[in-house]
Length: 220
Image (cartoon, rainbow, N blue to C red; front, side, top):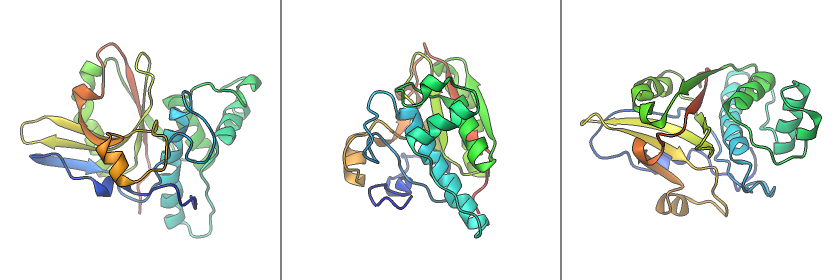
């Protein structure tokens, strides 16, 4: 987490959608992890790992604040793979591979490293995410931890930093895209849609299910 190229708390640099009536966003400190942020070329396969690293960074800061005598670290991509092999979730051939991970693997790694459990929220279609949007908003109000989103036909992992409901009852999700490549700064991220409040129909597709990994830990 001492890597100066990793931006922190990027959600604080973007305005809320117009007519926002109710909002829940990340509470606490975290780093924004994305493709190649540590020099490892994971383009095409590492988005789930990077989303996991963002969640891990939040947990590390949260646990560090709560226990000054404990040291916590964000795992590398290889360390994530080694953990999943050790837990027998993956075969030994997984180590060093370019295989993707999803919300279940995120759940396993966070539980193993930090003893932090997560809730997996399954939504059978992108067209039904709106039905769960209030529940996800309440997660941010109650816990304040970032959320990892995975899917099947839509296999691009996403990092969720907040949920907003407008006066018209329309929901927006604040997405930090782990697929970004390059030297991150707020202007680049916001002007090119890598960090953006998005309408649900611009995030989710009807022909894919989605899983949301919601860490059940409060930041101090």
